[in-house]
Length: 255
View 1 (cartoon, rainbow, N blue to C red):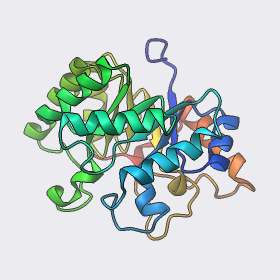
View 2: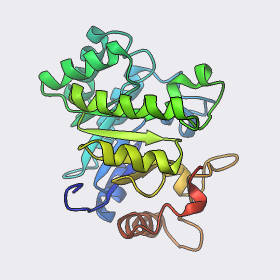
View 3: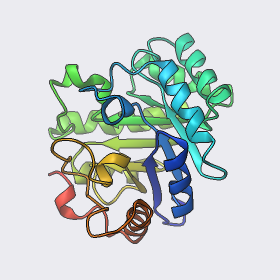
View 4: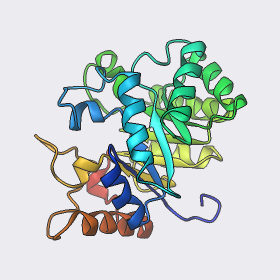
């Protein structure tokens, strides 16, 4: 799809019913994100989510899918070393039914883990930029890569995760220009969430794009249910707008 210039549509899902809605609307990739800790469990961050939680939600999403690519997050501290990454990946694929696992960051042991997972036929989606599991290190949910040194580091990290074997990379909360730069620098697809319109695809948290997340909606999101009479219509509109390039618009990005 990247080679052909066709935009990739990713959306989170946490149960079988919504998974079915995603597939019916033509979503390419369903992501069981550890964002479930906030939008399903009611926590203030993703950190309380456990591997057991992720395996459970991945397994029930899998039951609602036939052809849509299913990606599942490695939760907080499941990536503390290569051995734990392999164990978590094996459970998410073997018990959960995922076809790919998502790993945050590009620390040396993360790169080793990406390579180890890939060698064992577990595809990996990398995640760079505003990585929610590092919320305390960042001092909150802050946009990353605004300074030139930080931008250079993120470009190098994107090249590193690709070299380690990642098949996709999610870019979250970075300036629009940096999203375009990274997308051009690597051969694997980039999926943006608050990374501008130049990425090869887009992802949103399901509850954000339906306008049902409590509190303020992230700037990079949009309420696709507003003015529509069903969840199905909202998801279909999201798919159409990502494919056409109508979403994200300039107001959803960062300078």
